[in-house]
Amino acid sequence: MKIGIEVQRLFRDKKFGIEIAAHELINELCRLKTNHQFIILTAKANSENQIKNYPDFNIRLVKGKLFFDFEQIFLPIAASYEHLDILHCTGNTTPLYCAKPVIQTLHDIIFLDPIPASDSAYQRYGNLYRRFIVPRVCKKSKAIITVSHYEKKRMVERLKIDDRKVHVIHNGVSSQFKKTTDHQTLTNTRIKYGLPDDFILFLGNTSTRKNAERVLEAYTLYAQRSPKPLALVTPGLPQDFVTKHLKKTGAAQFENQVYSTGYIEQDDLVHLYSLSKLFLFPSLSEGFGMPVLEAMACGVPVITSNLSALPEIAGNAGKLIDPYNVKTISEAMLELLESSNLLEKLRTEGLKHVQNFQWKYAAEKTIELYERVYHETSKSR
Image (cartoon, rainbow, N blue to C red; front, side, top):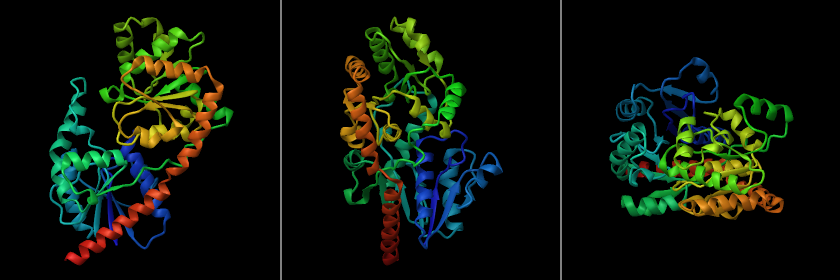
């Protein structure tokens, strides 16, 4: 079977969740040593060296200057040219018209929720594009993969699709995520990003659903009550966002305790987790919540939301809180940071819990789905 896997932004300089997850899946599919052939369909790389970093993959560079023409015009042409048996689109959307059977990974349908006015123009455009494309292509896809039972339930209800068509395959945690113990490596990371000695880590951006404003408010409440408050490190928040919000809430005196480092390179992320004392992820809505598991794998206690897919992913290994309640978030921070026993309990439970989320399991289930769709479509021809 010849399988095409679309990852448009596989070679982008700053990779985020969808590209990272697809890369991990592809790596594991190759390790399974099946008799199938994999073709990676992706946009042009910024340099030839990026392609050389993927020696085990058959890579087909697909034309397209914009997201739309890549996906809707040149991707289906490439699928036909390569004589694919299956086209797996990994980034939520797929071509409206494709001659080949399509399997669609739909991570979540958060884009169907009300679009916050505070979202950027880019975020709003992406949501509107998905709102138009996804309901139409879901009807045409032979199968849909999603990453949590929570999102499957939402998809079946809101998109009116047969629940037998939607398959839950949890993401895994990359093997790179384990506690860094090398002192020099940790020191180098601390210097590189200007990190304080001890800190709480929050990975989120300015999107409303990431709950950044409440995180900042909860942190200032915590800092006011703690005799020796830890700093807060926020790689995804611009410094001007932090400054503006702290001034607005009358907490400008805490600005020098909030560190906006900017983008953290993927290879350094494991060291960042390892340096942190506590991880905050009180998101308002997540289809999965990969950072929760990454932090746990690095031995970091986690505070996360009791909403959306996060209870399913965190299980009993995280401290679940109401993300809308600033006081509750701050009290959870105080409770954990003032109790070494509670921190150690969460750390131990987290390390056990992440063993249930392996990319090997995800790859095996994905191969099974490829083969099922292939045989079903072969019979119908």
